[in-house]
Length: 218
Image (cartoon, rainbow, N blue to C red; front, side, top):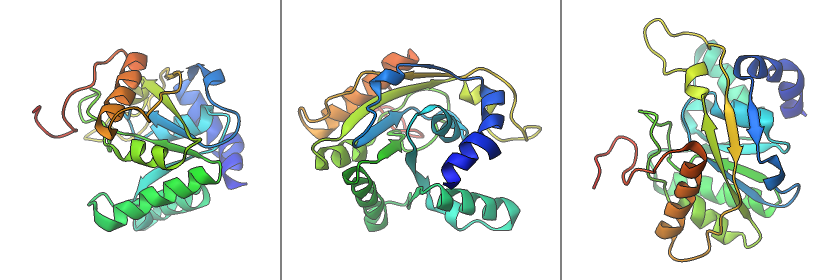
């Protein structure tokens, strides 16, 4: 209930006014059944945009820090993540991160929509980086899951990186391109992940890099 109230009344109209989203390929998103929405990640507002334009409710892996914040902003982030059913993930890796992926698998088995940024974090330079293999591993564990690539463009202009003199959104125009489903069950998980990233890159006009964000090329 809270998700749809936020989308239609409390928050969605503001997001739509600032982003003026143009969406293509909505017919490529299955109307029911388990779906993995795999997108590039350019700004903090990306998840709000996807939640606004997708016809089904997506659930994201949200960094665990959002559930432990303090102050007014921390309490608001914790409440938003809780009422919209986001999945906390420990970005230090290990067993706790594995538990988050198992939670995503459970979501898919129940017929839900899992939205994931395979890069693992927001791009620090606007380029499309190498994808982590967790998205493919989870999708392969749910035989009827459909993996749909999504390209986001323009969100970093609405919500640029935080810094001196940058405290609020700026009005812009965001493009959301939904691609044809990708068969991630062919070959090994690394090759399948690279194929998925190439599909995302085709939607954004970018060639995926061969290294993760914050690391040098091999």
